[in-house]
Length: 254
Length: 310
Image (cartoon, rainbow over all chains, first blue to last red; front, side, top):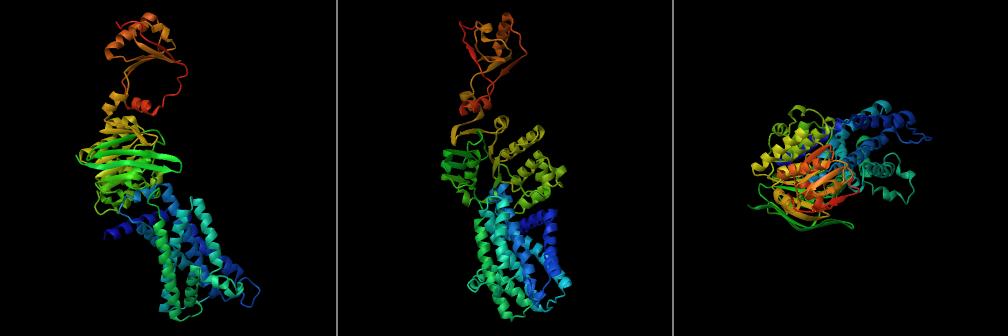
């Protein structure tokens, strides 16, 4: 009960803190609008070839979702850690009953809600702008755990970045350096056949690949549920590993 | 009384910098221990060693156990330069930290104790510096700790607020709370602390009650005269007199000797702007033991009594 109380209290504080940063709120939700407006509205898909996007519009839904699932937790959690460290907040928290993993879980819950809403907005915009249809069936609800687990995974990586970077600026630079390659080399916007054959096996090293494969299986390619669940399982294991690693590295001492 | 805090030969280095160099001390239950020292003396590092938030060598126990095993419900900490989430109201901040403990005081009552009940709905970032510090103090009190670490708690707080906070700390100590306080305010430490430790370059230079420290290290009473006259004018007054560009200082002046000293000035025709009789306090102890001194004493002349005081 007291653990639940600690996590609830920290989540509530994190939620209010986020909502009151108007710029952060605006751009968190404006980001998906920009992405869809540029890629789905302006560039558009050209299945006959000749454009950047040669696949049908629905192919890119995992990519659009990946933008928010990947970028937002990396930079938000990393920056939050840098802010906590600069304000000696971890020094104080270390003398309270709050555990490091409880703190990270609270940050993750805030991000899951924020990114869940941003993802919903993004999905809705994609449907409206491109005219794609997302299957309305029970299995589609698996998108929720995919987003939640994906967010947890990148919150863990964000925590690692926040602990290794020595400033908020450092966190932003490091998260961009990690997120951009992942975004384009994880079967999101760039199809595997466009990559050199020697590089293709490396795509499997990116956690985002399993997110993209699973989400695509649900929204576009109609993969068997077993394949989708396998991707979710791999994503979950990776999320657990990175979440644990991120939690362990959160500072308790100077 | 039982020792609540014990440090034995505590050492901490950062690279080549020695922050703590074999510090040993103990603080009894219900005692207010004041730690003073120059910037960079190691005060915050010692607080961190005692709270287990830095890895120090040596032995530390808090409430009879190492800091890593201590019941966190019983410990309160106000770190130095602490900045909590800035876009929470004072009430939300105290409630947030209250939510981390099983048993807590009523956050509203804690805010009232620190004098912030009128500003509890204001975001932290919109509070004045002194109000912000008071919220921070409140977050350290909300779990009603048995051991309270306050690292420069009154920095930025106005005189009235500071005195209110001193009263609060005194009440806590009267109620049995052990307080470990660091401060640059000698008034604060002299008023609150049962014992004082002076930390200098990572070592405890002296520990004792404020009275004992002043008696041992404070030096003599002085009469300070603001004048441009030199020591020659009062050379035969029977006092040890020191002069610089703006003052004459009569050393070891008992209150009953003020009259004769003034008469000596009058006899010599010395014109002066003011007279101040000074008793030594912790500030003199601090200056003497740390080797620090006031700036501005460029040239100095000393006149010793040529005969016995009359």
